[in-house]
Length: 340
Image (cartoon, rainbow, N blue to C red):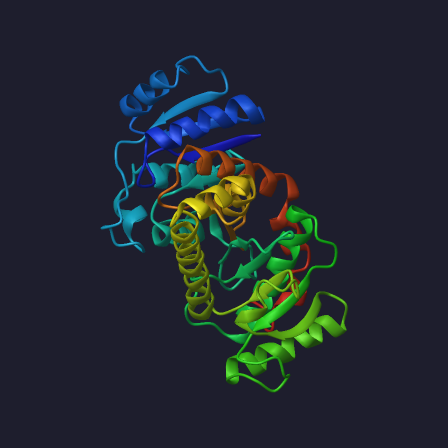
């Protein structure tokens, strides 16, 4: 297994990226190509004591795509950017999967136009797994596609189902549609039309569709895949992240607000850290870009070395699970119209 890693992507690059790569190479036994400004990358390797790490190679790339670059054009204008070189290498078969903590928009645009979507998939989607105390819920889409058609949502449902089944190990993943109510007639025209398509796919036994779900159902264990347009999905994801930060901030204030509460906090310290770790995005590593012909993982922009390590582990799992192969094998059931 060979993972292509954008060494210059993210707020903490290249040191955190290189540190995560060294840890992954040593503990996961995978080959890694670090793509970035060679002098800087090698300096970081030296700081990690990994100058001669046999599983790590360095590919020089002189430019960096920043958050200020226009996302849709960055990879075109910066031909020797680390992200662009990574995408070209993945397309050309020089690795099994790619990881980047760089610009989400640039990565999605580049993955779509360089690595290419699976033939028949209308739009690639981003699907983070949100922890819920069990195996989690895949939210698809979380922001890649603000405007959607019913066919997009149908394809998101299939892709999310294959991901949860093959990567997370959920048998017959339950698929729900994010809506303003659980009744079959709820929602706008998009939701109503998508509901009909998802129900037909469920009745045919192709997916396990369980109906509409509200935002409050996310943590109830009702579903394994939650299908949404990118606008609603992104609002939900950011709300969950904000609520988690607020909750832990309030909890910290309570537990350290008095001597009595501090003693109580010591008694449950291990459990509190366990809960915090469960909700920590660094533990998941990244978000898969589903619908791309080869595995592309978007790590969080603020990823530390632990997050990069987990993103690499996720990339390996994606490549081994061959989610793209499952999508390709079922593409005829996922299209409303034949391609020209």
